[in-house]
Length: 599
Image 1 (cartoon, helix red, strand yellow):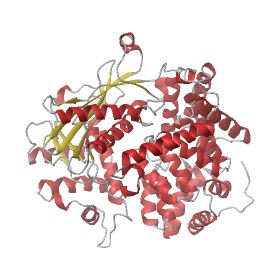
Image 2: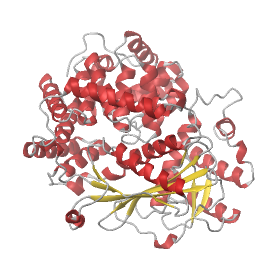
Image 3: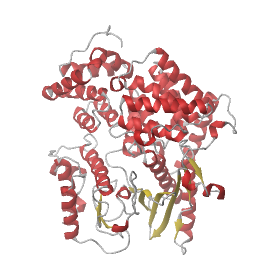
């Protein structure tokens, strides 16, 4: 990992005074929107690093100095430092995209630890920006601060439990499992499907041209690694059905570059002793704006070449093509009135971020019209299915009254999407949710397993499948997948954090559960408030619980008479339901009995 105080661009090292001034500028900016504790966190780690005490910046010392924890603090059981670090990284990124876009000194906190890095950004005043993009960043940009130290573990997680993180025969084993699972999915779900079918049409989907990663001309090994990473990135991007991946763009397409969503993924690889340094960036071809960039370091003494290539490719592909990521950020106003497939898919992501009934109606209408024009498009059928399923998932936020017919429409659309493309992870995700809300756990998890096998790098699939596994009683594996999704910034902001809250609550760690619940977006869905309420009840925090009860009764009164039904619909095991209801009752909420009225 890059050392603090080193300018990765190879120029001068920022002075202590420059870093202190930058810290003061960040903390005083209205675009740095974190509460006081998070500000103390940033100030503490920067000050300690400048004082030469970076080796003491561990979760234990930070928890004591910043969070007031005692000597019994356990980072595995109490994720407060890790959660706050994630928020800090995101807010630093936001700052450098807004008020700090022209700042010369860039402060980042690379993942895998808490030691900050201070960089001098070259040509800061000439960084190119675009109106609604994460734009104009060099390889030392704020998003590049999300460095991955491929030699270490993520703080507070047990990566040895993750199937995709095991050393040794990892590549061969993962490839075999992937191929087998996809084969099973195709065998189980395949219906009429041909390679020339319209579902494989690429019109209007964003195209990513993966350019061969550059390498130092004098290094044969670096050259081999660069080609290997390029091939691995292409392989891992292909399962993302929202994008089209090509290694070379035909001249006929080059002429259309300004009239279609077209991006270039570029990168470089170089070896410095035993350290492999790689950069990657996504460039919008129409105007040359860099909308994403990142740096990656790996210790070649710890990892072999194949594992390094695979890890880098996985992280790059996920960062570029993940749902709700850099390629899918827009708002409803920008795509109003458009019914081309990609705009309609963007409308779904926009609605899920805004989470309003109006945005939902816009997305559903757009997808309905697009699906009627392209009945063979698996992706459109899948996303349209999700809009109907969301009426079951978020009825109190969307003010919807789902019926059996609604669920039947969602299931039929999902089944059609899977028949059209049995390897479409989004279609399998929709089928998983359709079976889940039809109380068919076996078929739900079967579809979820096929979705995850089809594209384990799809953060939305990993998170949703993790939630279904957890709520079905398989908390260990489900929570691992949810944790994996959260670590990769999956879903709308604050969505999967409530899953982590449930995971901590069900293992008996109510304090960690409360922290996760408060990190979730409590206004996204009233059910998030209900989770926090049960946790507060188990902790005996009746005053805080009363605030949540008042919010629910005032802002979502329709939920109150249906609480039991909604909890039972989600938590399959009786013991899990009981733990949840005991917490609600301890909080002072009267839960209606078995014969609660239906919507």
